[in-house]
Amino acid sequence: MAIDELEKKLRPPEIALKPYPAKLITLASGEKMVVRECRREEAGALLGTVYPLLAVSKDYYDIVAARMYSEILGWFRYRVANEFVIVGAIDGVIAGIVTSRHVEAKTGMSLHTLTIKRGLRVGAQLFAAKMEHHIEYLGEDEVHIVAESPIGFKRWMIEYELEDRSAQYPGLRHELGGVPTFTLTRKLWDAVRAVKCTGTRPVPPEILKTADKLTMPSEYVQLPGWKRGS
Amino acid sequence: MAPKVGIVGIGHCRFGNSSDYDLVDVIAYSANDAFEDAGGLQLRKQVDQVFVGNMAAGMFNHQTSVASALVSRMDMEPVPAELIENGPASGASAIRLGYMAIASGMADVVLVAAGEVMRSVSGWEATNIVATMAHTEAEYNMGLTLPGFAGMFTRLYMEKYGMTERDLALVAVKDHANGALNKYAHVQIPVTIDAIADGESANVVNNYVAEPLRMYSTCPISDGSAAVILVNMDSPKAKLFKKKAIRIAGIGSATDTHCVHNRKDPLVLDAVRLSSQIAYKMAGIGPKDISFAELHDAFVIFELLNSEEVGFFERGKSFIGVRNHETEIGGRIPINTSGGLKAKGHPVGATGVSQVVELVRQLRGEAEESRQVKDPKYGMAVNFGGFGNNVITTILAKD
Image (cartoon, each protein chain N blue to C red):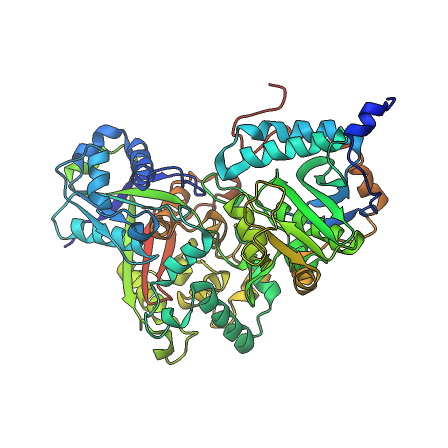
């Protein structure tokens, strides 16, 4: 597509981000989950995966799905600066998605974590992968984080013992609605990394190949009775 | 001579997250399921007594008088109804009182329904509420929680008998394999030993909860309910129910010190051993006659300890039996064929009744084919209240 002058003005300035190398995690079920960075042309599969969850109010899936849908669309249409999307895929089927944004050299802004396949801590693994990318590959010292669900608050704020910056720096507000902002620092990351972040690299080529083409889930535990295409 | 007491109806919901529902509706679901199983909802009018098992609706749901509410919800007035609270053994205590009501001659038909909705509060608040069963001054006020207690207990056992964390994981693998086949289980996902113990990611995938206990060494926080209908098998009313009764052959109860530090050896669970001995004596059988068992495993270490105290294994040897596959379905003594509290879930007040429902399903031959024990004669359930300080053992027989 030709990028005309107006479109250029509409796009935010971008910083070229270092890539996130794919890794492999064996889930408790024994299933192999490939965790890798998404390509822009995969936005269709990602949006199609997120869309059905707009109808699920339980555990705040609706708001997380709605915001993530807009974040992926914004990434696809170049309307969010320095965004990256990481996916977890089991045999190519999307099990979870995370979105995030590099703000400037030493600061990141975590956007959302959406667990599709539940009961195996897929979301926890993908959130850790997102933090790994921010701190270890993009070289940031701090990542600002908010939670929009009680599950998220427990998983991130409590389990990572994130710093509550909302009282100390009341002027600091995360982009997501100004709710209390917590921060993962490099020091906190170093303290929890061994028990929160896992995965082996490089991913064996035959397994990586299974995740090359992302597939939308045909069913969701969050939507009993729902089947894609029916 | 006391009449024979049997179970003629069972009901169960799928354990999991029912926090969108009212506790009384959750319990009524299983109670209605039990009447349908027994022959129809019209049988409600035959009930002489209702006992409801629940541990902490006052704290979890800000709700009291649950038995009165259930009777009214089910259009069963004016039947007498009482709530039974005995911590996580509330369900089995309710069954025991139902048995006593019939054995005493005061009732011929008793509905025992039990339930808990725990996920109405956060996980750490649920842990706090459950911890209130501990000794107030010596334990709870010192910050002890049940996972913390079980972690210390497990460490002691490991040091004394040489059990490893991998042995704990083997119990979880077996329980999850069974739970994955049980339509009522909260967690219907099998797990592998490589993923939760041996593999490179195991330390993260199966993280510590209270060292050495890991996530897969502990039960989930679950909502759910279960119900049974007890009948005097010698009464004319027994003929009104379509299912052949599964007889309560033995039921025993015992207590131990509330404060765990007052026990001579914390690894010796006197109440489990004594309650099982009472149940064995009443049934006229011994451990070798038991075909399968549901043993209270809020933490997998309890499954191992309970299996020793009831006589399935020598002290300190149960984990060897697990290594040798003796407790799997098809093994010498299948344990927790339902998935146990570990995989099926543990809505505290409901657990004791849920265990007995599993015994009935297996003895009737109505469990899912893939996890049905072959030709069982006797099933045992151990329901553990407090930290082993109030225990009920139930033995059912297929006559």
